Structures are given as C-alpha cells and as structure tokens.
Image 1 (tube, rainbow, N blue to C red):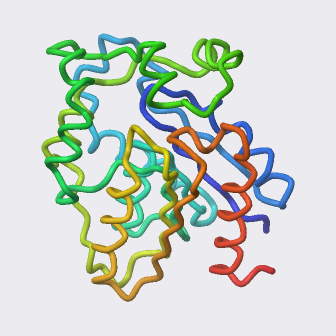
Image 2 (image 1 turned 90 degrees about the vertical axis):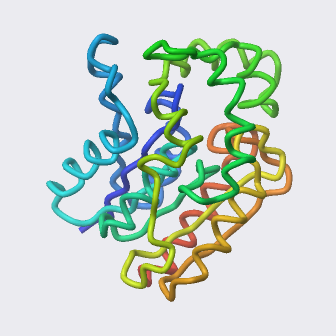
Image 3 (image 1 turned 180 degrees about the vertical axis):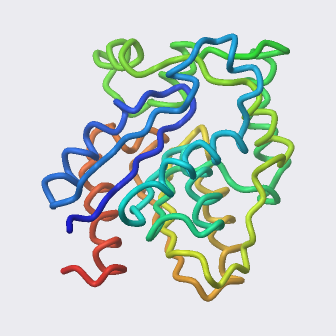
Length: 250
C-alpha cells in the first residue's frame, strides 16, 4: 500500500500552496492530500469561533478515518497543527516547516513578531494579508515579477483568533517529553522573517526532553515560503529522505 501524506497549509494560504510538494511526493510514490481549513469551505459568518482547537479537531477527525496513519506535513500554522496532532498520537510521523511554535517557546518574541498582524486585525473575525507584507515578510525570495500572481492565487483571509491564541499560548500546548509520539522533523529557513529560525531551533531544543525521534534542519538561503520559492526541491527532497529513513524505505 502506498504511503499517505496529508499536507496542512498555513494561515492566509490555500491548499494550492502545496502544489510543488505534492508533485514531488507523488513522483516518489506517495498518495497526497492537501486538506483545506474549514474556513475555506464555509462563510465568514461561521468562522467567528474558529481557533486552534477547532482546526486540530477538524484535521483529527479526517485523519482518524483514513485507512492508515498518514505522514503529516504542515507549514506555518499548519506546522503547529502537525505538532499538536502527533502529540495526540495522530499520524505515522510529522514534518513541521517554518512552524509557529507551541506554547512556551520564547513567547515574548513570538508576540512581538505577531504584533503587526494583531494591530491590523483588531476585533474583526478575519484578517487580510497585505501585498506589502506578503512580499517583504512571507515571500521575499519570490521574484518580483511573480509575487503579485502568487499573491492573487494563494492568499485568502485568515481567522484572527488563531493569531491571538498563538501569541498568548492558548490551545497550543504540547508535551515536549512525550516519548510515545511519532517522529518529528522541524524545517526552517535562515531568512524567514515571519517565523524566525531561532524560534524553530528553540522548539527543537525543548523536544530533546523526549526519546521520540526528533530532527532539525535550517536551510541557509530560504525564507518563510520555502515550500514554493526557488529551490523548494531541496526542502522537499530532504523531507522525503527523512521520512523514508524513518519508515525504513530506501
């Protein structure tokens, strides 16, 4: 039976942000699914209460119904969701790419980095990503000629609540000492201006409390959108090779 892979996208992005990775994983014999957040399948009026716990439960229900535990791959907030899911025993392994850190990881730094988003959102239920922030913070390594096209294709409003929860550590606690969780790989880009590489490295340090397999890799020339920016193949191939080593496939 072919290995299942579930991709979980970041806030502001759609499942289409995984197109490159899906093509690479499919070519290597995996069956891929990029799951949309419930906000993408519903009206804005129904997204008022959408937070991290609802997102985790949404994915947990879908994953539990699958014929085999899938490899879970998440980006940004999707990477945080992956960490929360594997802490609960879901999935065969988890790969968190440029992940928002769990509760307790340098909260002051994370809150400071999220402050511009929180100020922009205010009390509204959803917050939009500006083209300027997309170009300067999320995708600075995307060629200028492609940034607008990518912004128009991939970017959607995100639920405000998850940014407050991440900043305050609500609903994002994991047991770093969980010896029974599946293997975890943390990937980051040294040029990430959204989720600093130092935050991902700090998360990796906290996971050393567990004997469960945990790995970390920082890509020197990548930014936050390392799943689709130039040289994304380097990141995808590293993830595939790590997964195959964990599952004994060579």
